[in-house]
Amino acid sequence: MGLQATAIRTVFQTATSLGTAFDTLCEMSGIDPADVNDSENMVEWEKAALIWVPLLKLSGDPLIGLHIGAGVPKLLHGMVGFLIQSSKDIDQGLELLQRYGRLASPMVQYRYLVKDVAVLEIDQNKMWVLKHPEPARHANEFLIAAVINTINTLSGKKIVPIRVELTSAKRDVEEYRRVLGCDVVFNKESNSIILSKEDISSPLLTSDQSMFGIFNAIVAEKVALQETQSMAENLKQLLFMQFKGRIPTIEEAAAALHITPRLLQRKLLQEKTGFRDIAGEVRKDIALHLMKNPAIKLSDISEILGYSDPTAFRKAFKSWTAATPREVRKGQLS
Image (cartoon, rainbow, N blue to C red; front, top):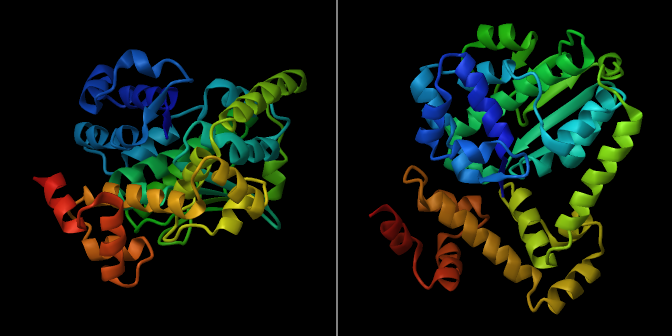
């Protein structure tokens, strides 16, 4: 899992317009400039997550993610970007972002719901937020601002959200309001852009229904190819992405994979594994990643993984790694 390489190029190019050198950003991030020119390339998630560290250092801007996002005319590139651009209106474009946004960044999940108002939620992977909270905040604010700017660019209208809600703590409220053009509420349960139903019906200047059909078929084929990998790999990625303090149940996982729990169990059995085994692998991966951050206590990791008893966590961890959490952390940090 990672981030579409061209998304990093967009971030760095926009930062260049703010006075930061593109090549310097690539060098400090450990990214080859040649690797960010192909939308099919994916940069490993942790390397992608940490691009905000040199951006913060070089710019000295505590709201760098917000400011870069506000300067991005188009969020997504490649076939998904072309598909969204060819949509008939903002509503259809946001539906497609919900459906296919994970192809550009598997570490981010979009949820889109329309009732009295339209709500787009941007949900970052829990491990990302826990392990790298400050870079995760800037990445999230980049996405919020970039989505709003993309909507304006594609519709040719100045569309102002009803409000924006952020999970992060309050900072320079007036600057957020200036950049996003609306009321911003902090310390909320989810990161959301709230739009009026009238605004989401706005047509896109780039709408092309003949091209929409072509791009839709190409993206659907790409998704189908991804789903040909093993059921174990599909399940592991799903559990990893949907981890929010607990592993989803087999019923929830099967529903997300659009199959029955019985069929999921049978497919895993054919691959000589089981739901419990995959769930254990996901817990182990999350634990090992979180343990690299010395600021997160082992007791906190135990709770994050859903173990109310630290002894149960130690026992499970030793079954995964043949070592105790303390021994592994000591080896990681030494």
